[in-house]
Length: 229
Image (cartoon, rainbow, N blue to C red; front, top):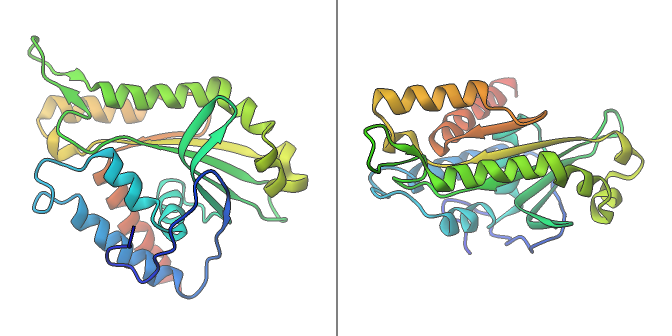
């Protein structure tokens, strides 16, 4: 898939780690990609939201976009990225690793759900909407990764290969990105989402955010990167 708003279009092969190098072209590339993503999920371009398949294709279109995803969520620039990564009995939409001889390594798995009206909440018979099935399903993925997938990742040959001597001391972090708060903008839904972000943690290093918060975080972090140059 060609990268909209991007000069790099190297499609990332699935289920393998690819080296990512942060260089002088990265920041301009990330800014262009983030601007394109803002348009992709905007109310004007996508009044009914964006489906999971389109989101996976968009981020999976280049190593730069997967690296941007990891950086925006965790504030870490990865040295390796992957899409459709299978680890033992589990599968992640995206994976990444930061391998630096000076510090212990970090490995991350990212799950994307759709960004549509019923992702976060579903209206049924009761007055207060129920939490959405897609959102809860994505959160269940984080539970599985924390409870079982992390052990399988530590035993995975592909991860051991890229981590090398740092394999035993690596930290693992997990993230879910789902929905958009513009589809849940009433006061009760906003309060419930805020409570979930502040209180629902699974193990260590889990992050849950909406796509609009992902965009906000990206804009802020890229602005800081620009100021630091």
